[in-house]
Image (cartoon, rainbow, N blue to C red; front, side, top):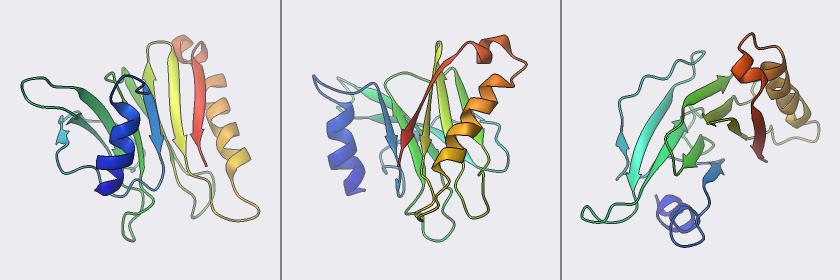
Length: 155
């Protein structure tokens, strides 16, 4: 909770706020975030869309959180994307290796943003994660997807 209320809040609010923030090791979402009820289709990987008000009810400053609880063993390494706009589309790509983590992405207009958390090992899966996103858009039958600009944020 403190990661969200101190670190994340500072990055997504105020005069120099970022528009998109990728969070690895996200823990649990902030307790004050409210689930929107949006159903997000995914390959067996649950994703929630939440609205988080960073200010007051009379002067709201809301951001959207796209949260995936990928860590069944305690929740520390969950993934999240925080955006100042609601996503037009949410992407979930399956892990590329056994024991790896999925890729969580959002589309806003003509841009897609993914959060990735590679396996913490010498021979990690980072190159394969990049290839997975590249292939997803290259091989898509959807001309909108083929024309998107995309970015992967992570470690």
